[in-house]
Length: 265
Picture (cartoon, rainbow, N blue to C red):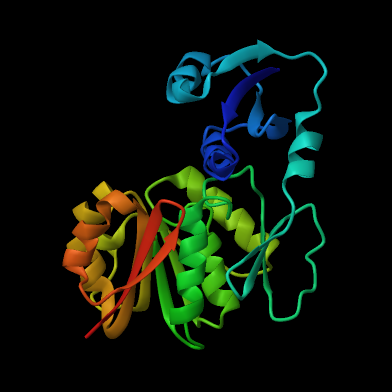
């Protein structure tokens, strides 16, 4: 067993934790260090040591061999139910979903794929879905990852929620998360170009800004009129580009990340 130690500011913990999960950590421990935070992330092998040290070079990384650390127990202790927006509570599968008035549980396995609810862009996507998904609507989630946004749409009353991803491993994780929520999945290996024109009342894509721009025409094509297009996954520095494409869009903000949602007519 091995661990990667990083030192960061408190406001950076959520983003770094999400990045470490995407790097396949098996558990994360937080330790207060006089106003800053030390993050210790466990890994099963030494295989990705060099790439991880390079990826997190800005956070004084240290790579250490561990003997008897129960990273699974540490991970479970660190992941607790999290309320997001006005409607959702995101629940790791080892917890009993809390019964909170007005809150819809989204059960997931945090270790399976990106989209754990920790990253600000996932949270922005959930907040936008609260506003624009109506009972009986059809949603397409492009780049579904863990499937969390597609599951959220069904919780809000969508009649259908279709998740697309070009990564088969992500789809396997999404399928497991649908099962944990006792929902039937509609998951497709591919991108928006495999769908029919105007097939969805709401289209959401939580992908990097570069990929969003590359598939922009496809996102517009599959969105029914009138319908809603929701895009996130990009920082404030890229916001102007997307506002030029969707000048009448709502803007949602969390830390340095942004989400746009626009009604297409």
